[in-house]
Length: 305
Image (cartoon, rainbow, N blue to C red):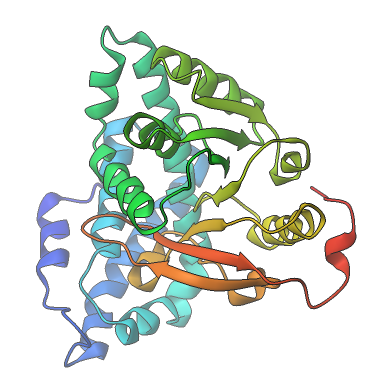
């Protein structure tokens, strides 16, 4: 399989795409063939076979997307790139790789933590650990959870780093939810291995499980899907039990190449209170919502998966 060379990745990130860009069309012509070639590599091998590559090669492919997502471009150029017809047709395939890569990478990290002589050292050696640190710290600073908060995290994954960092660094108790039983089992073992079982509980379920749980604040993972259903169900739950802060993570600007952003239509019944843009190499935009009631009567219906 053709590999992306470091030289090609370097040329991409070193192009002058700052701000609004003086020649957006030229910038698009630089980026488009690289992005289309990435999609073609996945398509020619099939996503399933592509994901069987060694983890180091999967990470190299991810690094290309990550470099692309962090190009210093303005919103106009990002919109021009992501709405270009050929690119737009290939975004579902490109985004499916990003999601699948994280599923594989985090599962491998979880197993590595469990087999490590020093689990915390292994966790801190995770290449993306610093990003999660910055993300958790900025969220805790901008949206400090009140004393006694129990955070519910929808789509926590096999290594719920956000919950781990909030527990270890900020004393936040939490419950993580994931719809995959294997992921839940691995996450529970990782939490116990790190000695945080008194702070973090992980259960099998979708956002609907929040009906039966104790919590005072909800966080929805950037990769948790489908967003429209999740927010619709959260809206109904809050209508029945009373308002509570809801925070979600999404992708904005050029970072939307990685995953479909949350759409305004997904947020019916909520009001955006605050948006925290990513800094450094963090990918996620963090958004705080306030429950405002639904424009229809669907919120009173039972939660549905």
